[in-house]
Amino acid sequence: MGKIVYDGEGAVFGRLASVVAKDLLKGNEVDVLNCEKIIISGDKKLLAVKILAKREMGSGGSMKGPKYPRVADKLVKRMIRGMLPRDRAKGRDAFRELKVYVGGENKDAVKLNHRKPMKFASVAEIVRLLK
Image (cartoon, rainbow, N blue to C red):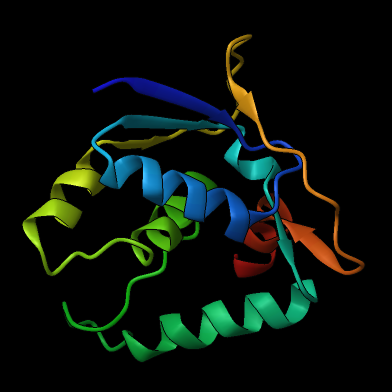
């Protein structure tokens, strides 16, 4: 179909991810720019603790377990993957059409402006806490 470019700066992650997932399932290619500036609602220390707990499940040197990356673009891509039906071919094909970038600039990028929650953290802050 077409190609859609989203600017993640100041966008609330859950709302952005649901829009991106719907566009991917419609057959569009989607690029997400400035993924490190996406905000996630909630306390940043609790968010990092949840991700670290999921990382610990997969530790032990095995290939098993949930894998949560420590890099902003891969973390965002991993979390968007959770909104796609990966057990079906449609979901796997849709996930291949997703590209996530740290930084970047595009004057035609769609910018989602939502009201910021009271407590929030950017993806960059959470990634910093994961290291």
